[in-house]
Length: 130
Picture (cartoon, helix red, strand yellow):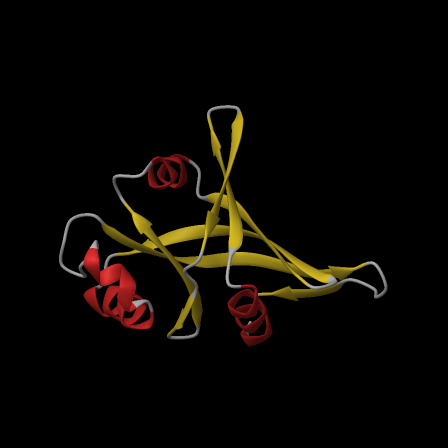
C-alpha cells in the first residue's frame, strides 16, 4: 500500500470516478493521506461527489506519472473521527481555509477492498491488494 501512496503523491493529482444514477462522473482530486495503515481521501459532504459515494461507495482512481499509470478499484468508507480529519488537514494545510475537523462538511474516507494495478506500455502489470 505504501507503494500506491507514494505513486499517487508523486503524481500530485489523480482522477476519482463515481457513479450518479447510470452516469459515470470523473473529477480531479489532490488529497491522499496514509493514516493508521489506511489510504484516505478528503472532500466536502456538500459536494455531489460525496452524495454519489454515499449512494454507491464503489469508486475508481486513476493517475499517470511519466510512462506508468495506476488504477485502483475500491470501496470508500467514511471516517467521522476527528483524529482522521486532523491528520488529513495537517498534511494539506491549505485546506484549513475552507475545512475544519469539527465542521459538519469535512469528510475523510478510506479505501477498502482495494485492487491497485500499476501498468505501463513496457512492463507487465503489477497488482497490489489492500
